[in-house]
Amino acid sequence: MRVCVCTIVHHPEDARILHRQIRALLDAGHEVTYIAPFRACNVTPWRRVSPVDVPRAVGRRRLRALRAAHRALEEHAPYADVILLHDPELLVGLPRSVRARTVVWDVHEDTAAALSAKGWVPGPVRPLLRPAVRRLEARSERRHRLLLAEEGYRTRFRSEHPVVPNTTYVSDVPPPPPDGNRAVYVGHLSRARGALDMVEMARLLAPEGVMVELIGAADGDVRPALRDAQRDGVLRWYGFVPNDRALRIAEGAMAGLALLHDEPNYRHSMPTKVVEYMARGIPVITTPNPPAVEIVEPAGCGFVVPFGDPAAAADALRRLRDDAELRTELGKRGYETARARFHWPVHAERFVAQLEQWAGRAVPGPVVAPQPEPLPD
Image (cartoon, rainbow, N blue to C red; front, side):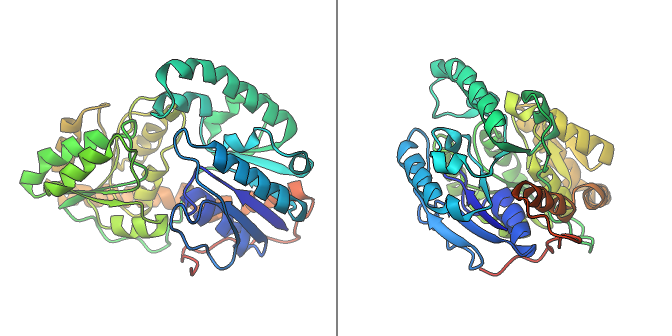
């Protein structure tokens, strides 16, 4: 099967797109053409994909990237059995030759709800855009195939669509117990994702010898605060690091942070970082977004703190710092739950089989699941 994967919004080394979905397709023996902003993100493509470089859509600068992606899709669609799109923008004005193929939209987020967290969209415009986004979703459902990243997304659509959850690789070897002197965050940094709360928390804890490490790219409006805090020595900010390497940095931390704000898009989206922390035996500190609470509380693998309360998050970290037995037990519970429920290769089989079915090229016998070791560059 030949699959053409396209994004202009996400980093080419996005965990879901590259490290999970594309890797699963490659490991199952399929060919992948990957249209993504490699040069804009200074990324060297994997040798096993056929790369096509396009500009990146950033903030309000999106039209050039969208046109380039549509040209690339028009060129490569005739050779693909399935076209897998990861950005809703790409669904606007698709060339006729592309629409005639099997097009799959991978639904990563509640696009309309997420407008409230996108600083580049002017506030007065957001209420006007939401109905347009819903109409685009309805039209896309009629014309194309849909994959959903969350069970909670089902209510947005009239028909049933398969769910491919954002899980992670979980080693069959239990991780070492967490240490007691650092906390980590892995993911994009923005106001809505608690970046400024983590800066304030780090300032509270730095005099006590606790280091906060933030691993991820950041929105422009929070970068000055991150740079100032790093210059003052109260935290380490690594910038963007590919997911597999970022999680290796996180290993051994006493806590993984998921201090998301109470935004509509987060109320029914599982924070993947929570599962990634659990998979590496890292106790979780999260705000009370329902999907996070539904994982952390039954597993007994961390603490839930109020929204926008850096002091409460700092207190939770102090508890973990001062109680080695507690953090070891929380890390163990998280790992066991992640191994039982969130091991990606189980979902990878279903993902690959679903694309094969839509392409009309189902492969007899079991699909080969990817292994935890990263592919070589």
